[in-house]
Image (tube, rainbow, N blue to C red; front, top):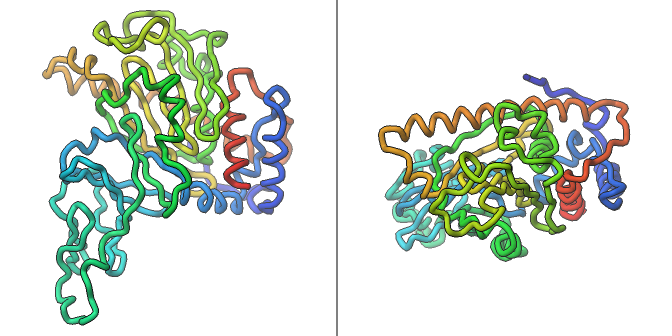
Length: 392
């Protein structure tokens, strides 16, 4: 469904009004809460505030460590208009840089994934090592005051958590990502050993909705039995069995077991980490602001959502599976097996796309009812409280 961006009564809403409405909604207890006010999904001023307070400051997931396994392997990602370059080092560490030459800021590479021994600017051939140091600047000896050591790539804070790569544009991040997510690892997701999951798919998609509409869609499973008849509904998790996690400033999650101990959605027989119900339990979680993960014993699906405007976003997503699952796939069957996974995920994405775009369309209406939440939609309320704090 293609939606054309339109002006509506919320487009030019004063920022003070959007913040006031958001604060009013998040101040209510969950039992009395109503959905996020439409202003925050349509207001241009609120969108601009999000860029400054959220995407230019918070930790953003850009991919998986195993996507760049060797020294010189790199990936690029756009964060709020800033292209970042992430490179595996000879030491095996992962380093992040602004993807712009230190001369006159030409983008060094437009490749999304690749391998390089060095990065050479296409404009004037300034050349940098994979550690970001300037190694060669043609004819710059003509400038007596020029010092190569003063013209390295702009370094970014980069961290790894549970096999995911995070970067922040902030020069002075308040708190490390691993520290912020310590209890989530300890209490819930650490037992899955996500670092052992190997990436088999990396794709991207552009949808016509506000980025927060996808966050809302992903962080509740109330819609799954109705909206995903071809995919996730087949795991047969009862709505009554869903549990929402504790309140946190950094994340939210919910989980539920499926019926079957075997087959899709269940742990491999060689999996020694997961015990009891966790061998057949899915965990859906959101690392604020925009990293979404469906974690199951036999695969994980991650999404990093990036706004491209008030009514458009780009979502980079990937699928990774445990090594014991991969070991059972014959080499000659591997490509067809991956294609089946891609088709499955594309089907699931299309099931969600219409919901997400209709949510954006419906919420721009001039008159709306108050709205309410189902008990297993608590994660939406938790996300709204995060937005209130970060934009205050």
